[in-house]
View 1 (cartoon, one colour):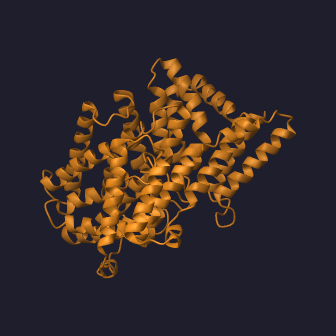
View 2 (cartoon, rainbow, N blue to C red):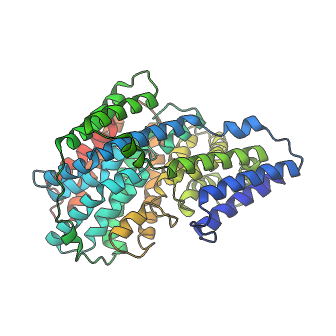
View 3 (cartoon, rainbow, N blue to C red):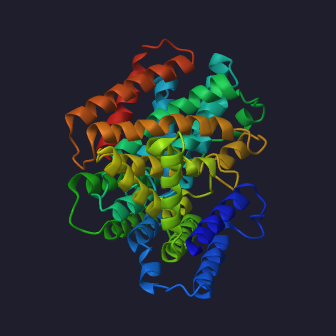
Length: 483
């Protein structure tokens, strides 16, 4: 009984937040989850249920929390030093060369998942000015106003989803640790799926959603060019090459230590003060993760996850959905209830996903069912931040384009929905691995990169075989496999 009450209570919290029955400016979701966790703990005593304090606190994994904080410190240092602004200027210069507009746009919108930060808001805020500039240029050249939101929201969904494969405290690390998988083994399937997801958002915005964006005034405000010192470019290259060295060499040192070392170097090069560093930190994802872990612990000790597994098993046995259908529905829960940070759903629901995934693997006899479900679920959690009506990253794009809140949500959700099976298929077909050079994986990455280049060429009104777009797709695929 207590487990059923706990599960229903958690679902009500999710629905009340997404449906805005509880105002976020009065009671943010993080606070609601913490209060809900304390209520569940109180109910366990009311029902004379043996409360296991160790299990409650064991649900909180410190490694992704500390890695996230260290990642935000590095991001804050690079942002304060002008590194992300320098990246935007470099992309502008690329558009004037071989890559052209189509190739540069494809590179631009995939930057967040190539250099994945612990929260997509870091890259989204930094690259939105460049996305607006390229959108204006594409509208001028092609005469299609839908290209403006296509560029902006493809960047938005890429940034939101990039939190999943981020090695700097991304959501995927929660799943890898919970399931006992190798660190970063979830990254490649997610990144390749994100590349497809990004292109699908472009197609959806141009062919399906067709938002009416008034670009008058946007072009005028983008004319001002900000002068950046050489230290800004040097800070960005230090950030890129530092992370690349960490990923390729994989030194036997905790990632937190390496991130703090890189932060210190960037602060030294960019002359960043400690006060400016702190101003660049984003606390929201950290508090969301802690609140999610608290709710997960409360559900664990009160039997909520046992009730969830029992309920899912009942649906699998007694309905036409079967175990596969229920597994698919479970994976899509974060997309059905999109929250402002995917860490909340990941931390709170991951134990239940893992328990049911083990049963699906056992019943079907396919061992890859469990990792396939977990990878797809994590990607759904990360990407769901983009269409979330509770202050998700999509609001950044809608605000900059002066659109009514929520107009882009359906297009983003549709693209995410179609992309999630790709990650599961990659895991089931190729398995998980931390190897950098796997022939089959590189062939798949190159194929998806070429297809992405062809699609973007067509979307921007150029010949499908334009070399700049295809080459950019191959570069994006290669960088995702290496970093």
